[in-house]
Amino acid sequence: MKFDFQWLACSLLGSLLFRLLPLECLPSHGFEQDTVKSIAIVGAGSAGLAMLKTLLDLPVEIRAHWDIVLYEQRRDVGGIWLPDPSPAPPPELPETPLYPLLHTTTPVPTMTYPGIPFPPGTPLYPPHEYIEQYHRDYATRHGLWPYIKLNHTVLSSSWTGTSKTGHWEIVVEDHNGDRIQRSFDHLVVASGHNHEPHIVAFAGQETWLESAKRGQQREILHSIWYRDPSRYVNQTVVVVGGGASGADIATQVLQYARKVYFSVRSPPRHEPTGPVERKPGISHFTPDDVVFADGSTAQDVDTILLATGYDLRVPFLEEGGEVVVKPRSNETDGHRLTTNLRYLFPLHRHIFSLAAPYPTNALAFIGLPILLSNCLSDTAQSIYATSIIVNSSLLAPRAELLRQLAESEEDLRRRGHDPYYIGHRMVDESGFDYQDGLIEALRSKGGLPEQNTSFVEAWRREIFDHVGSLKRGWKRLEALGQAQEWLEGVESEEDWFQLMKRVSVWQDDWEKKHQLVFSADTLIY
Image (cartoon, rainbow, N blue to C red; front, side):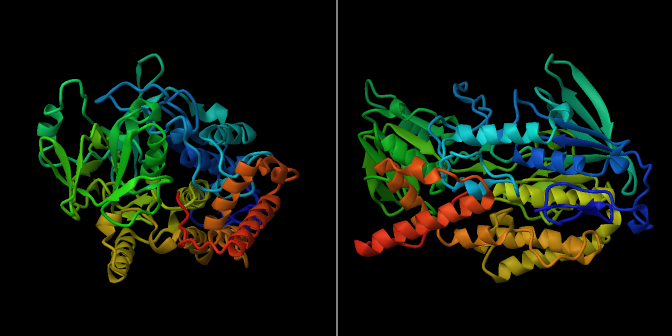
């Protein structure tokens, strides 16, 4: 695919590069070529790198006088994929929830930035080190390093000005512990949402913890601190939470534990592998037992591992008074963004803040949507955000954007979803439609040239329907020692697509021959 930059916004012509159009092709409104802009990006995970790369893909003639800085609080790029193998114990938070034995649950060809496949020889479901290196290579390939300030933590950010003009005052702590204050026209938050663990409390748990038998050490621990399954040798463990991490952790712990329970309130999106015992959600604790919602109990439990997700927080905007925390709320005062710990609102298309004190293109969030392929979504969001930072006239007035948001939320309610509970989840497998919708919205307003092609490549949608047999097939190839042979000669995106199709067909044929039937599988992100 090449991307051009037309109408001084990110255009989609099929590559990840932008080209300057002849000046006579440029619109006469919305942009002045000598404009000086300053943009701060927070976070060097997949979202921050995508945004930085998209901004730098603007023609030099447009961004010649722009000041673009990306602040990353950690030692390297990669975000959640950058390990923190030996975190301090609670209450100090780890830098990432990543654990050493993590493999992707998603085939890596679907996890890529558009047009940038993983290197030849990468397993279809690799350990996390491959993803970490992919992001590092992405930064090198696109010359991003000069704009990235590692070991720089954004402490606070607040708006100074009016709803029409002003700037962000940002306080940053550098690698020496010194505090720096800088001003920026635009702020892009790409710092992720897996930092603040959502820790569930149950009636009676303190008494249960204190009633351990002599020689027993009971524990309730969120999965953000989980690292080594061998720590649970000969223990009885209850894993709470039916997401991908809960199922994966239960599978790992099972190799060492005496007994593993898998406690979920609703049918899980992903099942553990092995003889774990499924239980409903925890109701309460007695001094001796864990009691589940159906009245059944688990006795002699040593550890509760809470794979219960994360609260949506933006500490530096909270510190600056720009975000207010209201757990379980669906109300905002209009002057600040609100997080109810699941949903940050009001935002236009999960990206631009619609809070009243600043322009509608002054504060953007990249990477909030979940249950989709991050790098692809981050790219689509970055194109959308960059286009509107360049030309704010592509956005309707604030009142109209708020009306559109209300309509979108009401549509979710009609389909049985509470928007303030599902938050930024792409329900009903709508992730691809969301990404295409961002690009189509720009095209419809002249921000991008009209094209007959979609942003989301057809192969990504097609392989989505085969993820179950694909994963089972790859596991069988690895068990047979044939995986590396199948990877030979696989280099381009088309090669990876054809490989996935071959593996899926090969596995389907084998399962039909052996009369094996599996339930419908869902792609887990």
